[in-house]
Length: 59
Image (cartoon, rainbow, N blue to C red; front, side):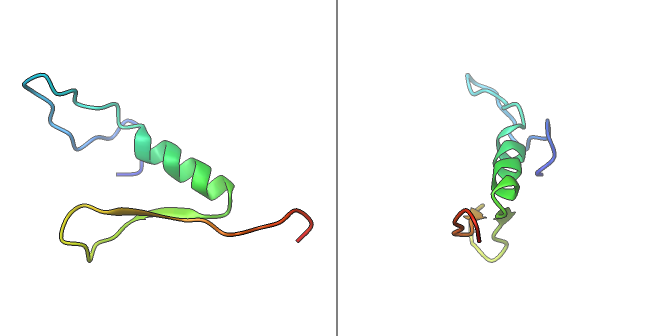
């Protein structure tokens, strides 16, 4: 799901299918900042989270 160009959207009736880039880009940015993006499997609906670490230069 976090791989580039992978989408679960079906599109149709004027709705775009999606490019499959959103989650992979979000994950790349979060990891660059020493954080993570994930899927909350306990939520009743699809729910993604972003954890970022507070960091100051020199630490």
